[in-house]
Length: 125
Image: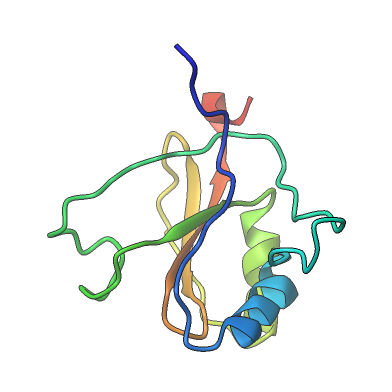
C-alpha cells in the first residue's frame, strides 16, 4: 500500500496573515510559504510526527472555538522556553516528564494554541 511520508504543510485562516507569518518566523524559526516556486520552503528536521484527531468535546486545545493546534518538535525545551520568555511570550511548561518527552504550551498572537515537544526515549531515535 502506498502511504504518505510526512506533513507537507499546515494551512489555517488568520486575521493578519503577514503579521502572524512574521511572528512564527521571528520567535519559532518557522518560515512561511516561499513567494515563488524558485525559493526553498522551510525544512523541518526528520523525526517523529503524531497525527491525532481529538473528540470535539476535548479541552486540550484551550478555548472551545479552537479546532486545531500545531505541535512543534524542539531540541532543547528549556532553551526554547527561555528564549520565548525573554521576548515577553508566556509559555507554560508541563512539569511532568512523560515517557515520550516533555511539553510546553503557548499561544500565537491570534490566540492559536501551540505545543512544544522535546522528544526523549525510544521516540527520539
